[in-house]
Amino acid sequence: MSQARNVCRARGARLTPSREAVLQLIWQNHKPIGAYALIEQLAKLNGKRVLPPTVYRAIDFLLGLGLIHRIASLNSFIGCPFPDSAHSDLFLVCRACGSAAECSAEGINSAIATTAARAGFTAESQSVEILGLCPQCSLQSTEPAE
Image (cartoon, rainbow, N blue to C red):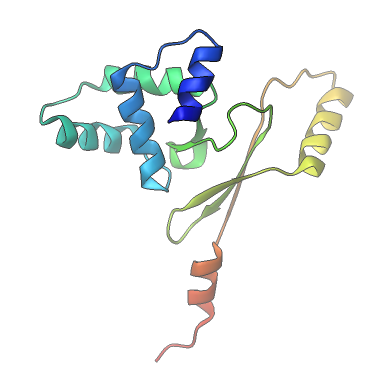
């Protein structure tokens, strides 16, 4: 949270209590989480119904500051471990348990930039999602059945 507050302060943005609550829920889940799951969890925390526009505004704010990322294939969100640095979004998404890890791969970034430049295209952002099995699920799938 201190990193998020620093990013907001540096950019002159305000991390309101509702924005902070959404960010905390996204980070504490350790897996990508969808907007409606966030709405349900916020209602449990607050003891009252939270309207979807409130959550979507918080998500848009957090996305705009790079504090979270959207994983399009899952229509869900995950916290960004390095919001202060320019980076592309490369996610390893486990099809079994639903976990996702953000990684950096300069070779992929360079290939995308080169390809875009050859096409005369100005890339503004990029996101690569790789679906597979995380180490734990991969290990479980190779264990013999009893």
